[in-house]
Image 1 (tube, rainbow, N blue to C red):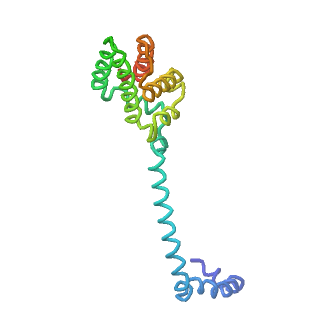
Image 2 (cartoon, rainbow, N blue to C red):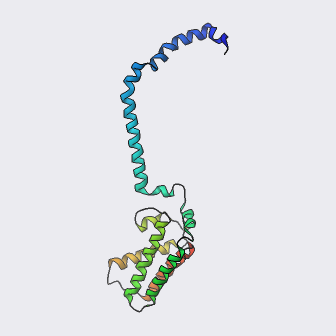
Image 3 (tube, rainbow, N blue to C red):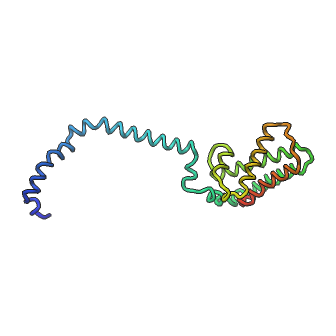
Length: 186
């Protein structure tokens, strides 16, 4: 160390003025009086951390923090494809029957299957409408048709006397099939 600095009268004068103030900052008296404040800030920090974790889990947006919706769709491609294909074939068989009740069942089952796929892709909690709102036309080109399909499903679910034609049911299932094909699930 350079001793010329320590011997410098100007440095000694500054050090002599600062030394008592620094000694007070590290003194036991000050540390003792600040202990309660330190503890309160530690408790407050932990409470803030707990609230942040709770809100992240509650909203479900932590799934999308590092992945975009398109990445989620691509990540899911190919997973559970055979099980989905079997479910889809069962749904299509209901459409082949001549009873409109089976057509309605096919529509509602396809909606449930599509929603389950969206959930498995990590599009978050909430309703199917919430999950669809996280997508855009780039992610799913027939998104507007999917939203119309969703409205049809609500009508069927809320009105047991809803008159569903076979052609309308076929178009609705074609909409879902197009979406599933685009997502490479079928």
